[in-house]
Length: 97
Image 1 (tube, helix red, strand yellow):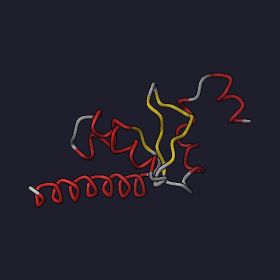
Image 2 (image 1 turned 135 degrees about the horizontal axis):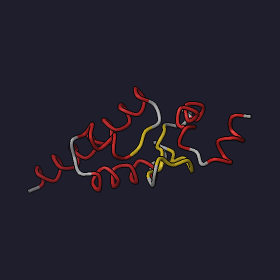
Image 3 (image 1 turned 45 degrees about the vertical axis):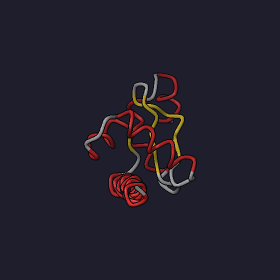
């Protein structure tokens, strides 16, 4: 029983490390893309992302793609401009200026 718990804990940590590695390589990202990469349900991915936010391993932008926030590793803030096409009209105009 203890071995199963250790194995499960290691698997959870492996998944979180995969998320960090994915965002480090691909830049800021949304839940659905991370979910597709991991090949797990988006609800499970959301739980992993929430955990990583609590651990301060990730940050969450106030900018959204649809209803999904953008997750990034601290230091990737300048890469958020890649999502400027998703800004609403007035905010996009201000960004472009």
